View 1: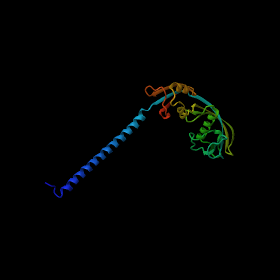
View 2: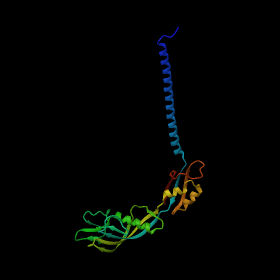
View 3: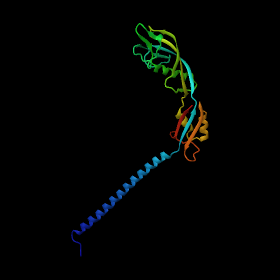
View 4: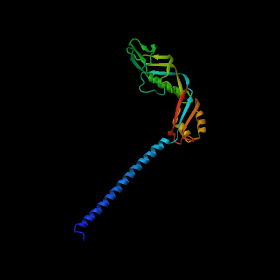
Length: 235
């Protein structure tokens, strides 16, 4: 028997549907493969970062006492920050409610007639003490305590009318070298552990060096400075 008039259309539609279904399935399979490939790449990146060689270095360092002095000019006419003449801005502050945690106090700077005192901010003094510390030492130092302790002072000159005073402060603190960790890391990255240890031992105030290299069989430090962590053990 011969196919009826509509049978050809039916056969064509069936073939077309099969082709479309096949292409849809192929597209879905490719999409699924791309998703799995993307996940695999992400896992490789994350895993690579996690398993990259890393090292932790502990530097056992000596703190040292610092005892110094600084001559400071307090001047009411100065505005703004500390300048090169070792002068800090001065203020007239009422004695009533005077905050000794914020301002420097001395009986010799009191204007009894007006019940006020010529003073300066302790933070300005502290900044100047830090500046004096860096000028006095051959190696840049950082204080361990945020604020230097004023153990004594001597008023060398005072003019309350002009709002000026010259004071010598005697200060103390504990200090460490201001290590440049980025420079240290760049100097030892990808170096043999023995050479890196010798370099670190030569740093100021370093008494002992401990290196934990988290890489099986690794005889060198990581080639990336960002994978090297440095901690200080202060003694």
